[in-house]
Length: 569
Image (cartoon, rainbow, N blue to C red):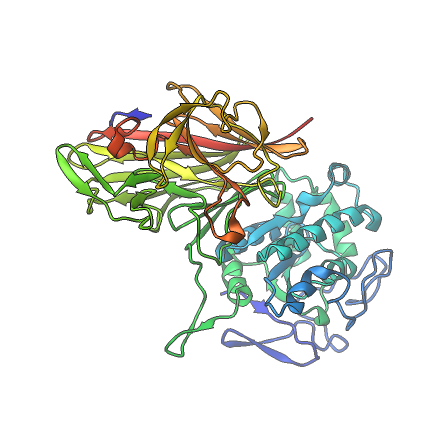
């Protein structure tokens, strides 16, 4: 649609009394040293059974004794070791309610580009209701919760994704259970005095955990012991300071540069911007403002890419100022012949616009939304100026995306826009997924992907107006939605069980949708996810004419689309 203008204290406990460890440039004394001879500077709390500080309580969930092997019992961590690979790091941040675990965990995951979950999300509704009513959970109550947290850790390990999880883990047995078979888990303990934590809880609003339950946590809490090798951080400092120190300790070891110096690894896609809202998580990267990840209740719905790997196949990329292809990279506009660089040289095409491989600026940000931008400057083949912004927002409907472009140049400019997300519902291949596409015709193309005509869908192998499995159909097809402004359409992808699925909402400015089953990708990526690409215009629109916008000076074009996960009743 076109619109007219108008200094933290990080302590690494030693494993032997009296040891000193170096953190940064300061020698810190182990806060657990000389337990039998002195009381550390922070108050030692006794267990509910009145045991001496450091003593672990017995009970149904009792874990291994100090020194017992924690690397056996689960295949998740052992697989990488058996393959000779370095396992992806995991940070387990523990502490009592009110210690700031969620804030620190989210900021740390965002800074490192790691995935994140708060273990509170894994509590059952019954457990949440019990705690809200002031009832402390028993070991038996916590058993399914610990199983769920462990399953998520194994999921991230299997996907080779570094991760942060925040969890009260009050007892040694709980921590041992979460670490067993997962040698890459690093324990972080957020320590604060009871007085400080009480004051924080008294000021907290809107959380299911009532302040009255804190005393039961203090009574039950078993502080991490030396053989757990925790990173101990005092919480009487800003969260940003805590995160800065933890990030330097937890991020992967630096790699050696060509000149023999040390250089910290940098994500190929730049900064990682994470959004969260009620069980939803989305990650947008600085490079091209591409959408890297979208999850709902821990279920991955994008076939995206990891923070430490290059972006391939156009995954999640914004396609501005044209989607799809321009044949020979050559077109005529306002009486001038223009030649774009050929970015698909094997087919002699210019493909997917000019903003995919440039870093975008973060313009605005909240917990559940962000806005990023870039400016297209006059350049060979596109001598026009556009101010482009992309907004990502999580909310009740799911993920909403708005892409806007304003002509800030001196004359008219041709324009088109699209985005390239790959969707998944957890199947190994797309063949069994059930697809619905509300279209009346498809664009016919040659072997270069350039249009040769149009064909009605009625009776063809490409007619997905009625839901049916994709099967062996190879799709790299633009469908015309045949709509007018104000209409909205939905492309639906359903799991073969029919139990859950994902809707792609096509809103303002979307007139075409490209469906791509990935048959021309690298072998390991083929037919792994379905690209559903909302577009304002068809392929080769700058040359063929229909569908391309002309933005006059001061005009703004807006395209809106979104994702909504669903489950059957």
